[in-house]
Length: 368
Image 1 (cartoon, rainbow, N blue to C red):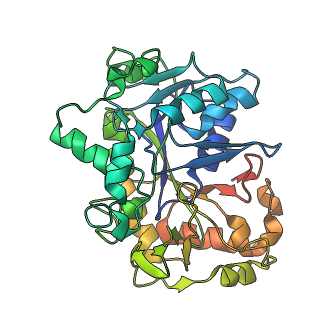
Image 2: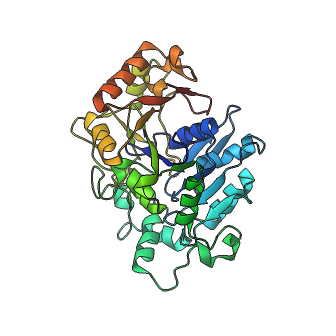
């Protein structure tokens, strides 16, 4: 991680690559003075400490939990940017759970999602259920903000958020911090292949840009201030599950690349040598649907590296390659099958794999 710069963790596939784990592990290792996010309610990022305690972040950066887990020894400033959107209840819950009421700064134009936004997206005829959206109200809120709907309330308009909403210019403040040598780590949301403009299969995508450049622009940071861009990937990409009601598929989450094929979780378990009951499939953090799983695509990764300008690769779910590495945090102890996959990735995109996740906890990470 580059000191005095704006470093970004972003997802290289269709999301759910484990940005929560990677961001929290990097923050724990490098101790950046500021952590930031522009997350929305349709993405839940999970961090788990060495004791198995989990924090699911939908409003704040995952690494926010490190203050509580370190008993206050690491207490970064937490910035929520103007393109973030959350429910008030979730934001206040996360602030309270992590004990960071003195550390959070919310941009005045950040979004607040209401029940009406959620209900509008859940409408089968006019909403986003047909593309298997998480239907958390994010797209509806964005549409209202873009159209500048009369009566739309932003973070600055809620009394409950007033202790956290600051009236200074966030970009200028962040640049001042970096000019003084402070380091920023930004946690992106969702995945590159879900980007509304550059993703793989419109309209089966999310409602906004998800690339590293979007994250940079969202926070008002100049390209001259960019540090490392960690592209998080997994050996078996996933898509959110389809929406099935009364035995009928009413929401389809989208196709895959030409060099992909959809496979089963049983195949993933067999390939990794894992007990089927251990790797019986993943449920999405927000919707709790069973994720669809695919073979690896060279094209998908190559596109993500080029468009995001990645400088480093973070390989997560290495235990899906060889389950014997579960929980390993030393590169030397990774099995040959995992090391071979790392070499394959590095040769494919000419970038180093510097972080390897082998399980859900922050101590299940090996650094190369």
